[in-house]
Length: 124
Image 1 (tube, rainbow, N blue to C red):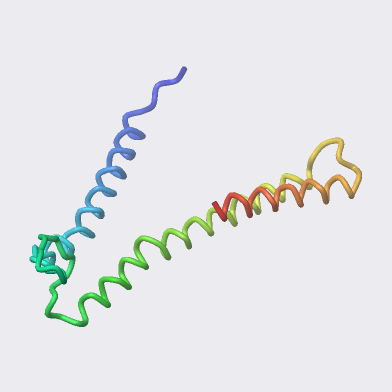
Image 2: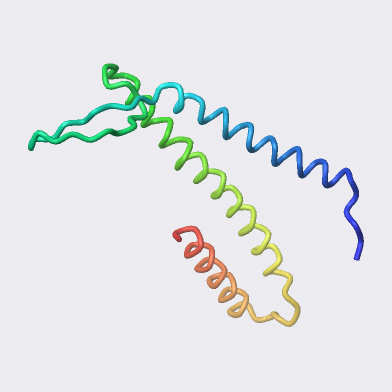
């Protein structure tokens, strides 16, 4: 078994540290603008909660909601969709070169199976 070179280990470590740095930078606004507030209810009881944005500002909660939607949902969905597209393209290309699959109906069936697999994987 071959040992990995130090360059590969170093590059992997740099990527891991980079991911942590980006994560910390994305968390800074949440930490800066969060506040602890007493929230009262109708039965005269109250509880303490950490609110991710100031209660006095109307624009900040809207910006916060849109950014959370983009960062946690839309951007990962786009990235995953791009990778699924590349996987599907590679698998379809390799499905045309299957040895012993001279029957067009069998090739078509394999492509349908591949499509079902990708759709089921994307939906879950």
